[in-house]
Length: 120
Image 1 (cartoon, one colour):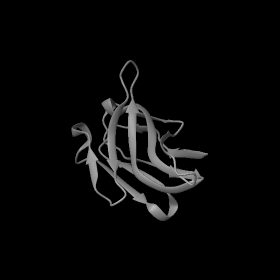
Image 2 (image 1 turned 60 degrees about the vertical axis):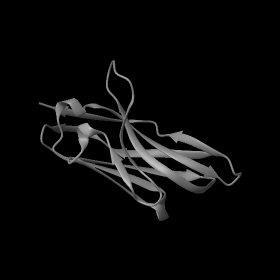
Image 3 (image 1 turned 90 degrees about the vertical axis):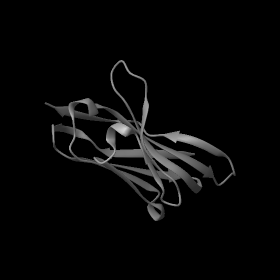
Image 4 (image 1 turned 180 degrees about the horizontal axis):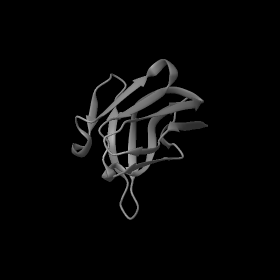
């Protein structure tokens, strides 16, 4: 099995910064795409940022220029640095990874979610 464990998050004032990290562990052969999603109360889960195994990235328009995603392939870890946070960034943030396991299966795995709250 594969587990994704997130850390970081919390409460910050508008304009502040927070960092999230997510470490994958278990029967991992390789990881392709890793990403961060978020879900605010009453809204659908949305993609925030993703990074491919080769390092290319994509961002939601709402976070471009403020958030930065990175990964450490040796540690099977993905990071999200969030700067100039806004109240509308408040949400539960979920880590996602497309993992090829040692058994050869490719599945998408999710972290447990971490709360980010931005006060105005």
